[in-house]
Image (cartoon, rainbow, N blue to C red; front, side, top):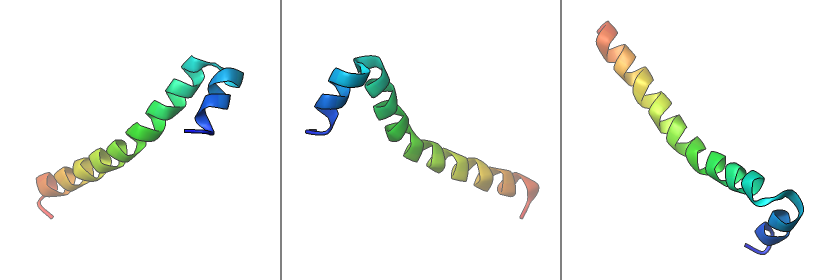
Length: 46
């Protein structure tokens, strides 16, 4: 949190918020990608 406040002051709130959301979403995208790959293999019958 201590590193976040100076970044908000220097870079701006929208940029910091976007970076935060991208970091949070990254893990969820990896899980979603793995699920799609598994579904593809299931459909193909492997």
